[in-house]
Image (cartoon, rainbow, N blue to C red; front, side, top):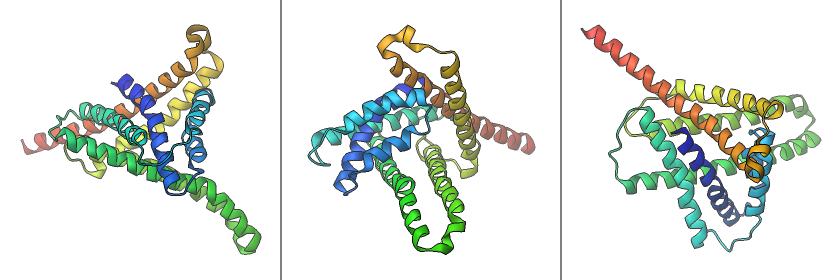
Length: 259
């Protein structure tokens, strides 16, 4: 299942960025592509991020006539395939069967794509425009200088909060059935810390031991990205499995208590 999510995520990445960039351009945020790519790939190991980021910049450098072109609409649709892969993985992790219609599910996936686009727009503004505004404020308002460190901290804290909110939303509303906030919180925390740990270990492995070029030649960068996304996907699915296991344990205790 993790391999399916990893491949789907990689295939959905380019369509999502094309769609998001076109929408941002339509809204007047033409500089979105650079910030969006940096926002996504700055958290990836350098060996993974650099080759893909270069290709993403090349793709996003192609001018498109408008947000409602047929190609851009298709890009949004293909980007939603990544959301569908997440839904399928969580349904299996939570051991639930999907009863909703395919049209409703696809519409929900497209809404998630739109929300993700809006989130990246907001985060790119926060991480890029905020330092500029902060420098202007420091130059003109002397009293704000002692609080610069605190403001910088909160800028990144808010970005992390957006990521946590996205994970919570995915666990609450993507899979079938209903779950409370406390039901999904352990898996979200596991995914966060597991992703950071997995990224760090994989980066250390690439820097010290791995030599993908000798095995995959020109496909090395793609294979590195697939393995990295596989690790993140496995951690994400394990987060869902953890939530499901805790819920089953609680239900078993309630049954035992009633007996």
